[in-house]
View 1 (cartoon, rainbow, N blue to C red):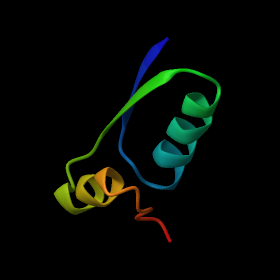
View 2: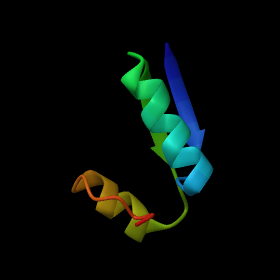
View 3: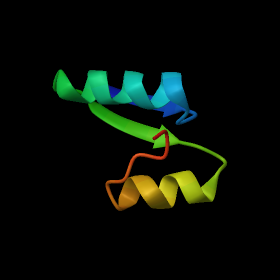
View 4: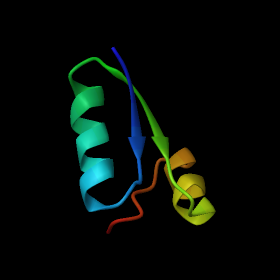
Length: 47
């Protein structure tokens, strides 16, 4: 299943990771470019 998570805060990011871990293709969208750049580097912006 393809899913889109709008927002990569505490809820969106954790939900996206859980859905992805269950085999789904997850796309995360956020208006904060810094968060997206950190995710592309496989860093968690919520720590």
